[in-house]
Every structure is written in C-alpha cells, then in structure tokens.
Length: 540
Image (cartoon, rainbow, N blue to C red):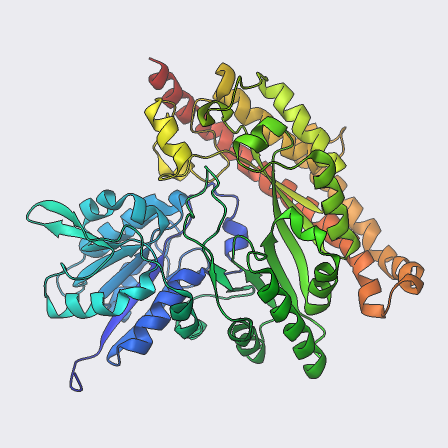
C-alpha cells in the first residue's frame, strides 16, 4: 500500500431543518461524532486525507438558497468518498438532498461512493440506500470505517464487514450485529478528536465525551447500549489538549455525566488541580446530568471549582403520572430541593421538559384526562417554582426506533412523516384525550413565552423585546454594586462575581429566548396549515 494514490474522504453533517430552534446554538459548536470517525479513519489509513463539513457551523461557499455549495467544494478539492452523518431526524431531508447532489454531479466530479451513519440512519437505512448511498453503518462507526473504506476503494464484497446495510442482488442485506458498540478498552484506545480536520467553521464551544451509552431505559430514548467510559486521565487529556490550543468553553456530550460517579469525581479533581497549576481562571464546562446528583454536595462544590458552569437537567414533567410512564419517578418536592442545591453551589440550571407526553401508550392504568389548557397551567406553575436560570419546553416527539415510536405507529397515531418537523417544536402525533394537536401546539408555545416574560407583557409580541432590553440596561450598571454586596460571603472575588454575572446571564438569555420564540412563531403561522392538513387526512 506504500504507493497507494491518496484519496479524500469528506464527511458532511447536514444542516438542521429551517425552523429548528437549535440552529443559532449550532453555529458555535461542532458535532463530535463525525470528528471522531474522521480522526480514526485518518489515523488508520496512511494514504487517506479527511475533511469534515458541519453545515450548521459553516462559513464557506454558498448556493443561491444560502446552503453549503458542495459542487464548488468538489470542484476545489474532489472527494472520492463522501460520508454523511444522519443522526438528527430533523436533518434527514437535507442529508438525502446532499446524497442526491453528489450523485448528480458530472462523472469527473462524482464520488466513488457515499457512506451514511448516525442514529436515524441505523434505524431507517432503506431511505438512504434508495437515495443512492452505497452503505449505511449501524452504531459506532469508528469500528468499521477503515475496513469499509478499504473495501470500497478496492471494490471488494462487503459481506464480511459487521454492522452495515447495503444493496445485494436487488435486496438490502444487513450484516449483524444490529448495533456496533465499542468496548471500554477500545474507547480508551481511540485517538483524541482532531478538530484540525474541520473546514469552513468557527468553533467557540468544543464538544468532548467521557462515556457512551446509558444504563437508563427510557421509552422515548434510542440510547439502549450499556454505559462505557474512558479512564478519567484519558478524558482529562482531551480537555488539556484543547486548552493548550486556546479552547476555554466545552460541552460534555454525555447524556448523563454521573453514570460513572467515582470516575466523574476523579477527573473533576484532576481538572481542578490542572487549573490551579496552570492558573487558568477562565474555563466553562456544560454537562448533562440527573437531578439526583444534587445528593452529593461535595461533588457540586468540586464541579464549580473545576470549571463546570451549567448543568442541563431533564426534569421532563411536573405530572407524576407522566413521570411514572417515562420511568422517571421523582416527587415535585425533591425536584425543587435538588434544583436549589445546584443553584446554591453556584451552577446555572437549565431545565428541560417534555410537553404532551402520551401516557396512554405506556400501559399506565387509567390515564388522567387533562385539556391542553390544564397541561399548560400545571407546567407553568411548576416552572415558576423551580429555581432554574433557563428552561426548554419541547413537544414530545416519537423518535424513530424507540418503544414509543413503534407503539404510536401501531395505533395509527403518527400523522406526519415529514422529518423536518421532528425537532421538538411541532406536534406530529395524535395527543391523548382527543386534544386538538394545533391547540396543544399553541398552548406549548404560549407556555414558553410566559416563562420568559412577565405575565402582563408576553402577549405584546415583538414589543416584549424592548422590556427585556430595558432589564439588561438596568442590570449591567448594577453588577459592580451587587458584587461588592456579596463579596464578604464568598471565598474569593471570582466566586463572588458569579452572582451579578448570573443576573446578567439570566436577563440576556431571556431576551435571546424570546427572540427565538417570536421568530419561530412566524414559521408556525405559515406551516401550521401543513400539519393541520396532515392531521385531517389522518382522521379521514
């Protein structure tokens, strides 16, 4: 292989749908999965060049529609192999469009093959193979990416490569296993993600990962593999390497950072020691965790010292019957107490909730009947009691491949299969208790607006932004005075400064959230007819 001609693998992470509320945040970060797969491929194959395009965070040549222009990218630097990351269901329409674009190119530009991977692709490989993809990978692609590239390059049969789907004799052949999973030993042997492979992007928040999988078995979640993790020392190396290159903001992508509690404690302590040795004052980590982590106050203190600033927590619902149906039994009192503990530790709390969860499909005895109005009132009362800094209320979306998806589909309650609506901001199924989906949609959006505005101003549309700007204008000059008032109660000036900083961050986030909601409402007025028509056709 020493004289093998060099080839280019271009991995593309497709842009979210046009109405996705995460698009602005996605412009600051970059998906970790494509970077890991590209890094492994580049390390294992000496004659392979790799570049990664994240369409959500993209600053390259554009088409007239404002989308990344892959024709120009291919003319400037031809890729022989194209990889598509199809994890997010909402981005699937764009993923299919990118596949067709590459396969429609002139012969001198057309790639040899298109490889697709990601959560959605693993559940629904047919739609990608029908669009022209040569192979769909099921599960953690680092396991097979090198052997797959070699097989495609040499045009040899794919029958011996595990965990993939492909066309064979006019039929789709799916090689076992159903889901490729790295062992802990293999995870620790992986190279650190090489963000130098990323093109046309500006990364402000770097994604890092301590572990994969989840030991929870939530009905609405697709992650069912057992939790595996790096050694604390190996994970800390990821952060140290990025810090040495100037990175200061990180998002730990693990669904539950506390799955390995002792390992979590170790890398926090070592990160704190690293910060002290290097005198790194500015470090900002966001992690996802369960509320029960608050039962370890020593860990909360250590999180703050190590540089964790924000915890994103799935409260899911204030309604006990819904929590039981989701397999998340936790009382209101405990939820509020735990949230207070996070706040006392100096951590920003981002509350995540699911609105409209269909308990009737879970086999729960005699589901409680509530109207959309009653649901919204129960959620708002709870949200105003919880001492959170920000909140995210998403409509329940049946994720393809989950228990809930199959149950709703079996009952004929899914009325939209337009994947662009599957982002948590649209109702795409028939709710419980014969609630009108459009009414549920309206109350859910109204709920978020009420949380982010005073009771008497949320109805005034764009004028509410002026109130938020006024709040920002009053908080900013008051910050030094607030800091001086709280300084005697804190160990050092940096911890004391977090109090006024929290107030500023809160009013700024409220302004930004209301801006996003109002912009989304314009799309809702335009597109609700589409969903209403789909629902009526389903009823007919």
